[in-house]
Image (cartoon, rainbow, N blue to C red; front, side):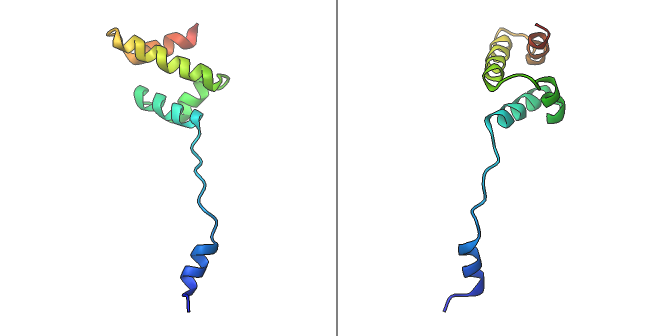
Length: 79
């Protein structure tokens, strides 16, 4: 005879992952900037995911040239 806990566990729906591409990019930006994710989300509100990937790659390239990553981020938002 199966235990009640095993029966409940078998019938429980699987946990869905709530991670999205946009959310992962926002976490990345927040970590690099040292800011809260809500601040970053507000700054990039109307940008598409494709634009966020472009922003990430351009900021990473800017950093490889010896410049601060945050300066590339804020400079790109002004353009």
